[in-house]
Amino acid sequence: MRHVPSTFARLLGACAVAGVAFAGVACGGGNAPASSADTGAATTLDPASTGSVTGRVVLAGTPPAAQTIRVDGDKTCATLVPGAERKTESYVVGDGGTLANVFVYVKTGLEGRSFPVPSEPVVVDQQRCWYTPRVVGVRVGQPFQVLNSDPLLHNVRAEAAINQPFNQGQPVQGVRYSHTFSTDEVMVALRCDVHAWMNAWVGVMNHPYFAVTGADGAFSLPNLPAGTYTVEAWHEAAGTTTGTVTVTAQGTATLALSFAVPEA
Image (cartoon, rainbow, N blue to C red; front, side, top):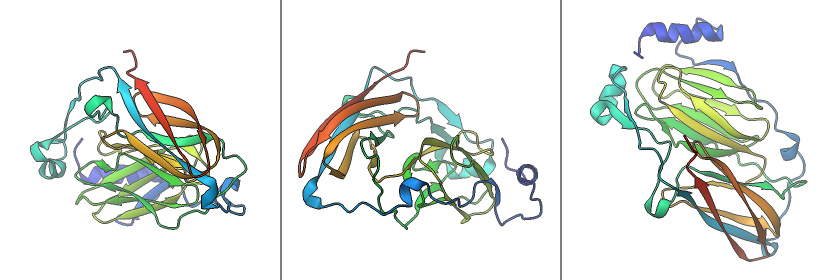
């Protein structure tokens, strides 16, 4: 796919707002109010009554080999990306099968509680024709931003099933689009209509107990109220897996989570 002015015109037409070039274009989305889970009085936690969960996520089996993505269909991308190619990141596996880009969160056990919502935004950047980071978490009601750091047209489309989807053209370097999700959802996929190889995922949570694994597969969920929880791990290619853990006051519980490579 080549970056030409007609591409931007197509995006503007799709959003039915022709004539607002260089200001950014949105279809759907917007700043809906936070869900009821985050509008009540926030839970006050006594640190002496909380504990933490730490663990690691691993992949059992050999994942498919990474595929080569050619980006030279867009001449500007080709100048930004060394060798004009990237490798797919459906599986990023480290030593011992540790799995990166896994979204880990408390699925059950926090019902009836609400927590303060951060005011600082969570940012996904478009750098060298790639979403960075690939997987993020954000709170319901917290600002979420998509930044275009590239000197070319990008388009970010949020494929939400529960939240309001949005479709936003970002025609120039430095454009930043802000959005607020209204309810929890795991996961919201981000795509670029201009560069089909660009993908990212957003986990929207009504509590602060979530993490994304790095290359070592490790995660930590600190300051959890004492109790028993179901913890779920989500991965873009391997699916989901869950575990149960009991947290004691001032204690650290460990939880090992593993995925198997899905059968072809």
